Length: 203
Figure 1 (tube, one colour):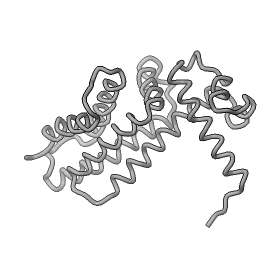
Figure 2 (cartoon, helix red, strand yellow):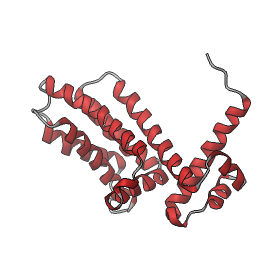
Figure 3 (cartoon, helix red, strand yellow):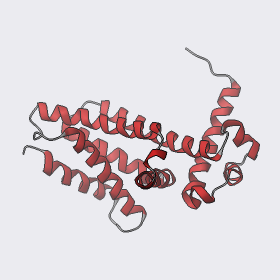
Figure 4 (cartoon, helix red, strand yellow):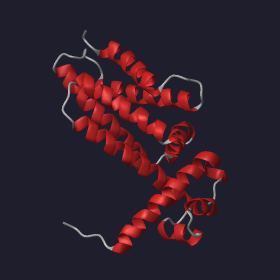
């Protein structure tokens, strides 16, 4: 069992505060208008402290994005590993993503921004970002493949279906945060699941 030093614990707290502040600043001001000084002030630390952990604004940005995606992936992995039917696991996947995005507005705004940016400058999208996104879809694809084998699901293209479900959950939460939808979050989750399940289930 490893023992973490006091300095490591303090560093973790500081970086967590910095990344949370960064998500808030980037979400409210956008990447170009945000400054490291703004982030430091929001985190309650000196600007030099931010640079101690992150050499540039770009490094803070990607760290803030990566941290949020990893936290979401961890939640998804835990939920999908729990026993349950294919139907229950698909429901869980949708629920975890929608709830996480809804509860973490600032993260979602910069997450969504990267998808829009990718259409204009696809080469600028960091490989880590795309890899983590694909890993999320892979968790669901495994469940869908199980459903096809057991004949619970029709013979679908499991990879494309996994991405479609991920994209639909992102679209629903976008409408929610833009206030285009006034449904309760549980109604949104049910809407996404019902729409998908009726299209892929055998019965």
